[in-house]
Image (cartoon, rainbow, N blue to C red; front, side):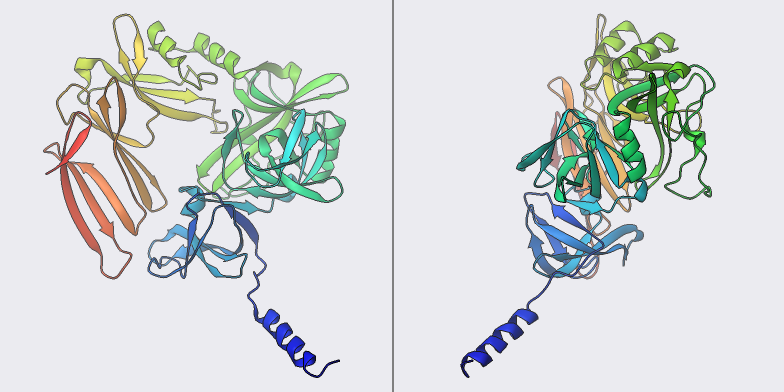
Length: 471
């Protein structure tokens, strides 16, 4: 070998070995925000930025559930590594609240295989509807689940998560979870044999029920757990006679129909218990979401008038309304002259032990002589009503709190409906909190703990006809 070439090759090898390599992680994620996401040098250190990870770039998660140095277990951080090998930290809020990233976790063993329930399922290059389609997988195909995304989305009217799947001799891609039923490998093979399909609706139990692990299988038994444990199966969450179960699938075995019932009790953003099992069709009656709504309307003891029910049917997600637990209350904090009511709409069902899919959405309804009208979108959080401009339509201060932070929306009436006049948030480090004073002004307190001593400023506003004016 040329005596000048050998040192050059050794130098090149040494340089290549010194280049940064992305370390192996526990799992990985994708940036989904068009603005990217900031990688910080340390948890809670907003003065030292490592880099901005761009949209569609992937990263490895090296360590999870790192407690915040200031807020403790009210705020957690991931330690991550970029593809180029740079390491740093991003907050859990980026995945849970800001929705800037989606973290892909390894599935539990009981859900590491799946059966395609759609007629033809698109498998894509990345977890995004705009991503290139790699192939179409036919119904009843068995796939391996490699990882599950943290971000819940809505695709073709179905809520779910993106899954990384393996199909056809080791090929990989991403598919949406609403069109795949998840199992262990042995259970998935059985599901293929029974030609299982996805089905959404409710099952009204009409006799003492028996729930089995598979259609016509053994009876479901409670897993061992303590009162404070999470992620456990407990048969108490199954519906009893005259209660509803949430249906997610249907199967045929030996000429009989069976429905898969899935019931959840959510305790916090990261803690839930469940009951899942099959029930034979003769033990009750299957209802679509629309049929469920009509059934609850017939059985409800409600103060809703026909004009209120007509207004409820105008909601985009009217199918699935539970009229038995939907309530309407006159608004006594300034809305009496306009005949305003707080409408708390129940969607879905929950049994006596807390299992199910019940969700409550809050709206404002105005009753007229001939008809009622819903004059707001859904208003989440704790609500404070105060008529700041004395027009008969009280303004609404809506506050949601999550893990050390809060988001506040001030809504006012303008041009026939309520809309946002101010939105703010505080994550424990910086941001705003909003309150209404006894003098009917809006007080905005701005906090900043990101650099050195805390900085707090207060600003006051007067509200009138949809506009905030600084005092």
